[in-house]
Amino acid sequence: MRGKPETNRIETTERGKIMLFKDEKIALSVKGISKTFQKHKNKTIKAVDNVSFEIFRGEVFGVLGPNGSGKSTLIRMISTLLIPDTGNILVFGFDAEKEANSVRNLVNRVSVEASFFKKLSAMENLLFTAGLYGISKAKAREELLRIFDRIGLSRKRIHDPLEDFSRGMQQKVAIARAFLTSPNLLLLDEPTTGLDPRAKKEVQALIQEVCKEHDTSILLTTHDMFEAEELCGRVAIFHEGKVQKMGEVMKLKAAIPGGPLVSLEDVFMHYTGTTLKEADSGFEEAETLQEVS
Amino acid sequence: MQAVLKEFRAAWAFVERNFNLVKRYWKWEVVFFAYTVANSVTMGFIGKGVENFSGTKVDVNFLILYMLIGSILWGYLSILFEIVAETVAWERWEETIEYTFMAPVSRATHLLSVCLFSIFYGLVRSGLILLVVSWFFKLDLSGANFAGAAAILGVGSFSFIGLGMIAAILPLISPEKGVQVVHIFQALLLMFSGVYYEVEVLPAWMQTVAKLSPATYALQGMRASILDGQPFSALWSFTYPLLFMGAVMLPLGIFTFSKMERYAKKKGLLKRNG
Image 1 (spheres, one colour):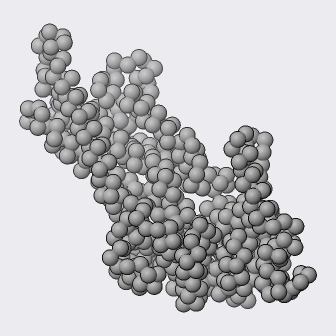
Image 2 (cartoon, rainbow over the protein chains, first blue to last red):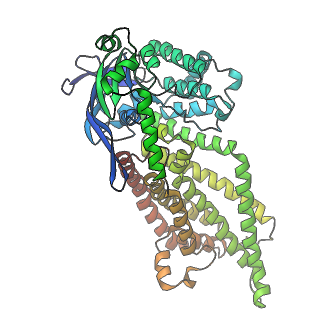
Image 3 (cartoon, rainbow over the protein chains, first blue to last red):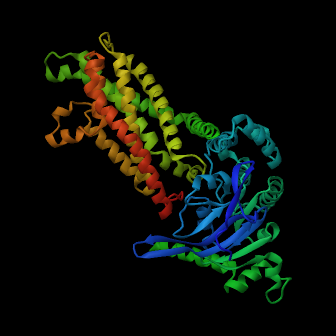
């Protein structure tokens, strides 16, 4: 791991001023972060345990892990919604804890839930987002019509309440919301979970297309290994709050017995000793036991 | 300049969003409006009926107005308090809280713009209620000092908003129980502040507590200006506690909320589910 990256230059981008690292390649630097939650009186859960990694500018980086492995906690810490117990996070040179507002200018997120005001229309929801990010209404309307055309949302429906949209379409509007703010770093937290195969493909294609246009760095968390293989250049195998292994997809596959013709699922199993399915069901079982107790 | 413009756009976005939500939930608005009108009219009739209860001659116009001022002003202050105090709870219910809190907007802009909406909404709603309720009663308002009442209302709004901001912390740090505690707090304000009676009828210890509530001074000031037609100079005894409370509570509310937001982020309490 590298030491704390030094910053020395300011660059003006679509979203405002960003501070560049010396080597001008790093979009996100996560160093030694941990997060523990108090679940019950005497029970704590270490959701993220001493995690470090870097994401380069323009890269799609995958964090692969089962449900409950700490992926969403990681995303929340990067998006300034959670403060780590230890370690630090730098987004284009800005500290996520001490310079949270600068980080928020550069980051947006798409989570597993679309998270909209369901009674409001797509246009009303997205104009609200535009306002929060200081984008003028005229510019936002123009950009939104372009994005709506791109995601295949009929102009007749842009004034319909979001609750009338399918889940797949809501998720597309969530991606539109993220791209409306032209983030330099986009955090995709299981963006296709729960979507039907067709909607999943459409959302994945949309991510790929729009990323190319905006020069956006992406952190994608997923437990869908095919999705990771399709979208990511490098991945980190995440299990029980820790990075078990990290590297380029092809190199990781080549490094295990049977490689390089193995799947990412095999890579996951090799480094964690469990399958994703087993890890997922273990998490669900623990959750159920917790609810019962 | 650019930063200021950005904050203004964000502030307007909050106001417009709240307006859109009111528009989309219009059926609930009708329900709450009907409920408040019925409540205010009932209070007016209680005032009107006192003569029949007591069997003695009383100033019915005074009593009706006394009860109506209590009811309508309490309705207004409750709206300010509720909208501000339930900002977090509402966003958590709509599942949008994380997106709002990760937007590059200062918390002061966020909270103050919600307050601005609540004042506008509260004034429109209370005005409409007054209009409907006045149809039921022949009220003599010839001696009322409306400008003084408006001043009291304006000054009182600030301290109530500050109180609302402090109360908004509860749903932030306790996703499960926060809203319930806010309602208890609101009920206690109603009881201590002399909404439908003079605080002098309360036990001594309750009168001491009443002195700490901005609603007490707002209600007394409104009654003094509308019922007694007192001039501005005579309203100062109600205005200065309200000014003082507003000056303390508003910044204190923003400051405390920001501190508690940090606490919530350390403990992971922002997550949408309790």
